[in-house]
Each structure stands twice: as structure tokens, then as C-alpha cells.
Amino acid sequence: MTISAVLLAGGKSRRMGQDKATVLFCGAPLWKTQVELLRRLEPTEIFVSARIDPAWRPANLEFVADSPPSRGPLSGIAATLSRTTSEHLLVLAIDTPFMTETYFRKLCGQVDLGWGVIPMRGNRAEPLAAIYPREAAPEFGQALSGNDFSLQALVRNLMALGKLRPVEVLPEERSLFRNFNEPGDLTAA
Image (cartoon, rainbow, N blue to C red; front, side):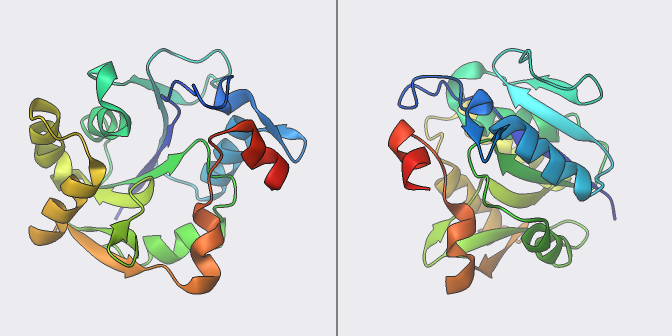
């Protein structure tokens, strides 16, 4: 099986007050931390999904424009699923710098042909640190053409169809999903 990866960087960062991708955390911009994590996983290909091609994007990573741009992360994942050449797409949000190679390798070990994995905290999915099968592309397309752009609703549908299997987030793994939305989040970290 092959796995591609996408770094989702299409948010407007309104609450942060600046592009989250360029925010410094532990001495490095978030985009660099996330790209290095994805490279260590050695995916078949790495994409950067955003509304416009970011100036910071390394030349050897392929840009995928969110399509349509007004649908949040749903747009980025859908656009990338339509371009990937792999059986699976690993998704990572730009603003989750606590995610680890170990955790993603654990997820990679639980996928199979035709289905991916979605981390779950109780009844709530963590769709921005998950692995989707290429076979989920039609459902992403349907969600884009509908009125509900919630990844939670889409994930529930994909689980019902057997295209995603839930993986419980253990108590000691919860901090991996911590994200940065406001300047105070950086200070608290």
C-alpha cells in the first residue's frame, strides 16, 4: 500500500492575527515543523493545500489549491484526494505541532485497501490528523456540493460506509491534537 500526505494550510488565521504557517514555535515556523514530520514518514508524495500557493512552500512539494476555497479543510482534502496517486492520503493540519511520527506510524499500520483510519476522542473525530482512502473521494465531492461542510458529518458517513475505521485516542495521546488558534495558545504552550 502507498500513502501520500497533505499539509493543510488554507485557513485564514483570523484569530491568530497572522498566517499560522509562519508563526514561530520552538524556534521554527510551523510549516517547517510539519513538513519535516511528513518527510520523516516517507510518503509517496507530499502536497501543500491552501487557498493560494504559499511563498514558504518548498519547491519539491506539490501545491494543491483548495477547491472551492470557501469550504474550509473539506476543500483541501477533497482537492488532494482527487490528485493523489496513492491508495491513502495522510492529512495533517498546519497548526498541530505536537503530532508525532510515532503516532502517525501507528495509524499507518492500521489502514488497509479501501479504508483508512480516523482518530476518535469519544464521539468526536480528529479529521485533521487522519488517513483517508482514495475511495473516499466521491463522498468528499458530494459533501462539497451539499450544504453541510462539517468534516464530523462526513467522517460519520465514511465510517458507516466502511471507508474509515475509528481509532480511539488514548488519554496519553490527547495532547498530540492540541492546536494553535490564537496568540495566547502559543504562550500557554
